[in-house]
Image (tube, rainbow, N blue to C red):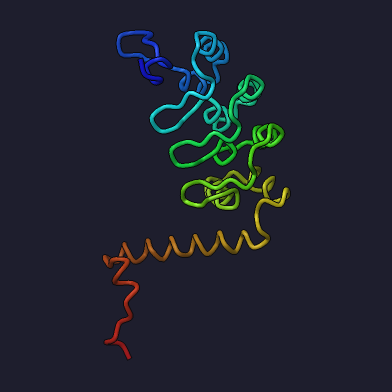
Length: 178
């Protein structure tokens, strides 16, 4: 039996539950039952999603602490190379991951680390987490300028596409104009 089948149980006709869903739903009792049945605490689905990724991503502090206390890999990578810290959107979870030895210099497969993560958090309106990361020194001082440049580029690209041009058309100078 493969690890995905082992981590999944049928709980109805078309209703499946597994350690990843239980972790996403912050259902500590079900997660404990899966672990007691022999499921590996670092079990990953086909995308590398794991209980610790779910707990960190959804801000489930109590579940995250339980997983870490019971041997979850604080630097486990998913298929994008993201560690739990890189998908964390909650200060309490971030601090807990850090206390348990999370690599604060980790980057994913696209070479994105905490500074790039902060740009995404800012776009989502998670000002509390951006402020926390900035105050901790994880975001460069010129972060606002980087964020504004990225937004300007996206706005310009939107205007180019709205006008019916392609990105390649926008990059080529118009030799007809004087």
